[in-house]
Length: 518
Image 1 (cartoon, rainbow, N blue to C red):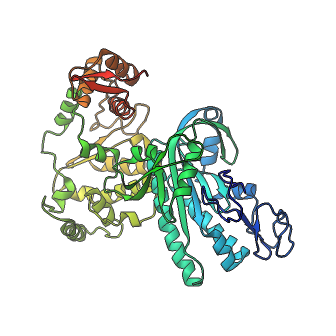
Image 2: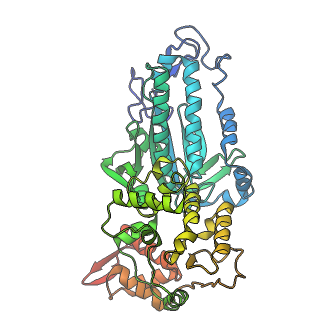
Image 3: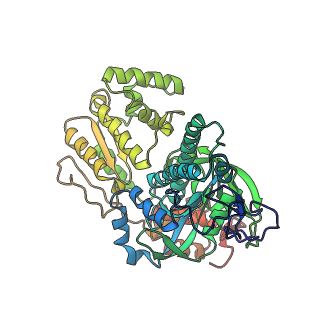
């Protein structure tokens, strides 16, 4: 029997696909009898299986379910995306695909009956959809007992793999709570767990429908690999491919599972199981742990920053205000923060978790608070706003906020309030943002702007030499780096990392050369 999910030809007598684990039977909505997918009528009661039972309002058609998704989409998102349809369609994108599938739906139907099982699945769909939208993904398909979600298409995201894994982590947490709740109502219900598979790769966006469904033109097998990972995953776990692992390494803890044979591919696929988020929250945290690249060509800009801050040494404002020493452990830090918040008369519930997170305290409690990265950022800024003015009266305060161009309107309002509150205080604010971003405080007398220009060829090659740890580099490599990175430091770092990962360059006799044609 051919599996409708992966098209694998299964031997007779099996109920689940031996390749991907998908079910190979149809549950009669009228009597619950288990039928082969090839049956047109139920073998238990004669009900026509191609017609859903009219008494089951929850058993919606695929198109109706997709329409239902729209009420969960963030306000204005649909219109924003569809207005860019001409630019999106036909574009080659790097996307992260996530497949979620619920374990034990057949067993659930047998235990409860079709109507109650579909009612529970409706609640499961809400959990899945909300978690995907929390991290700015979109639901592209709804399967019989799960979903296919996209991160990076049609909405472009710079950190799509990280968002997909965080969404998966949130789904597992919510499903565990939901399962416990259902179990209290009916102890005969089996545990409800999701299997999740994630893969990152290139696709060409095809037709974009009004419901934001995306049809892809084949580029490699990006979508299929994500489906294969979901088929391999244990219930309650998330499996990712090496492509996703490389882009999120350091931000999460993984277990290496080894190589798996995948239908349709000559080479094996390496799989990783996501264990938990790490304590490092940003790419900068990961880079700092591995070793940062020295500044090249930024001497003037550094001098400007130092000139703006020549009245006091740069101290960690939070550690100073809460009297936290270098040798304090997490428990001691927590006690000092709580004591300090009482002195400042700041609300502990809405402030403590975010300050602990800023101080990299394990078990800060912030992971237990369900919110998107943007929501978390807003609340961190709110917590800082409560203590910034009082704190600056004790020690000078330096705040650095990166990528201001991504800030939403509410965050801009907080920063505008902060800027209007700092004249005459020992507060030094540093923002980084793209040139096209237009802020509202350019006319302030206490505001200075520093533009970062591209590196010169000489500066770019100096950075290249440091990243490779060698002075003797083949001219063809230097020309390639200069051509592809155009003096952008971040591009230079990422490009060299890619050349190493793909084994395009090699070191022979203390000199780096191209190992293969580009």
